[in-house]
Length: 199
Length: 186
Image (cartoon, rainbow over all chains, first blue to last red; front, side):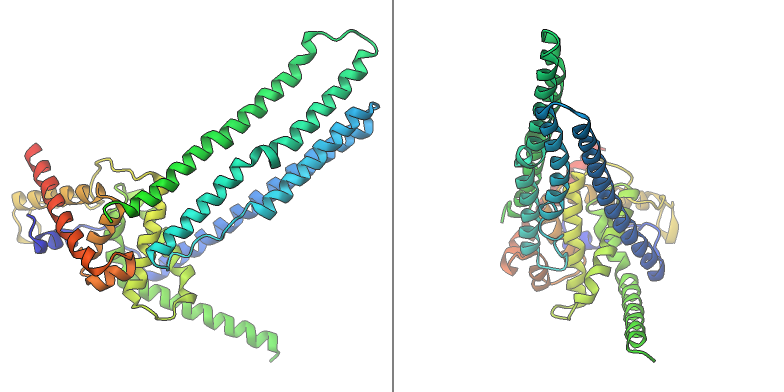
């Protein structure tokens, strides 16, 4: 069984999946490329629309609010939403998708670089994504509570809202900086191990 | 005719030439590419996805192909790089599933049903064993089984020609052991 010719015969005598004509595959390829481009365009559009909506909503709140600290907080959230989209556009894309027609070694290096870029981006998520929004929300809440304190005595119940979004932000931080980074690091080490083992 | 129109016509001609070249390449290498995707994905839908991904890679790389390497080396390089990237994403599903879509055709082509069944089992065992190999070993052995020379394998994988020979000896032994073990299990 281990005779080289036998292995080659077995390999080449595999029954194959239904074949396609070159022109058919070309139209599949063109459809896939256009679907991918559309997905990217839609994702960018969604991000921009969401940022504009959040910014508009908090600017409106800032305009409505009478307390200066609360206004400042809303302004920070609005600016934070715009900043996040800017940051994603400016730094989010990273190195281009590695060209597959390069030698395996440089393809591997390019893949590793791509993963490292994503890891770096996620490791800084608390700074560029969470911090502006969190600081804004906390400032806004502090302002609102200061305003409330003028008319009534504050209780522990007033801490529930900030506690809830603190927990949500902590969850988002964990998902990005711990869980997702761990997964990406695992994939990165697989790329290295997949090529380097028994080299 | 305006310059803009001439430029547009030239681009159309360029796209048409690219399309013709792609179709020719795909048809020439389709069987080999289909065998290759079988080494990375076991179920038909995954194999088709991977094949399409490779085809996209070929299409996108085509304008940059300057003939520095042979067409064959270039195609296999694209195919293997994309297969690796894809298998990393899919975490290499190695479950034992039907080998390929074509149903077993008893006693076809003058082969007895029993012989055909044995061959079918051996092919299954071979594919299963190949899918269990580390990625680089998988690349080396599939390229070798496709009939590529050690120099071509070096150009694709970066493994030196000497190391290819050593690796192949070890891989063949490993495959034989796994295939025998699977045969003994039946």
